[in-house]
Length: 304
Image (cartoon, rainbow, N blue to C red; front, side, top):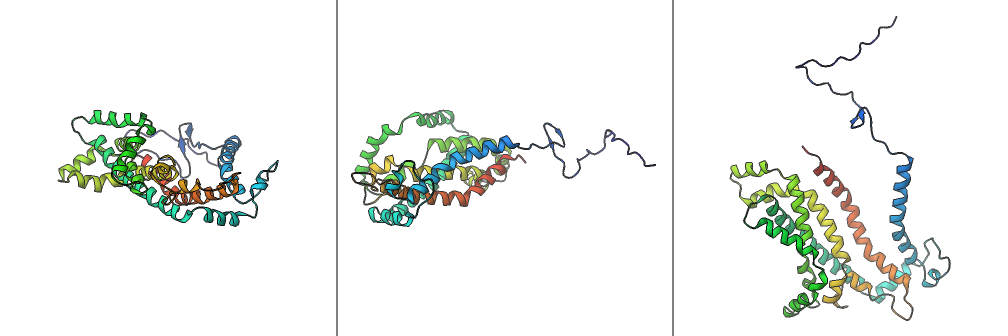
């Protein structure tokens, strides 16, 4: 005869809590259950991925074919052999190399300045107590409701007075701080930075600057990474203000793309080839930092 296993008994008062066996997971639906996606979930995700990636694929197809090929009905859905030829024509019609360097300088400077300044302001609004804090925060958020087109004329008059027209600082300095970045970092630090940690640092004699560099920066790093990525993409894709403040002699990528495909009939293949060249650096940055950003978000979401 085989012995029957005794049923599990409830732990008595004072006994250590029982842990589940290795490999089992406990969720809200009950012990031992794990959430698994069905075929419908994968179908929806695959469809969303297809819709999101198709514009980029169509850019590659258009950039690798001639304008006559794309005028056919129906157009070809496969890449063609003219990609290198279109790239060479892009380099002949516009100074893309200089435009890429200018965009890298502008976007990098704006990203570094925005992340640093917005983290400082977000820390002040989240954890420091001073008179008028709520009023200043409300005023900062209120500026997000003002259309940027309203400030174009005064801003251009200012940079003209400073003799910065057609210089990169005319594009860099107005974007060093954003109201969205201040609000984003304020909300992140309110949730992620405990008040007890700041009080303990105060007791140890740390100044506000020391607290910011030694405590706030390490905790805020995931939020800073997300803000940096969003700021870099926004600055890289900006066209409205650079086309006003800069000329074709000192262009960014978006200003340089305006010079492509000119003529009686716009050459869509050359325009798409230039667009592809201007998109590759953004994809490269996201490919290098995307995993760290996602990992930082997940790490910041776990409460210790």
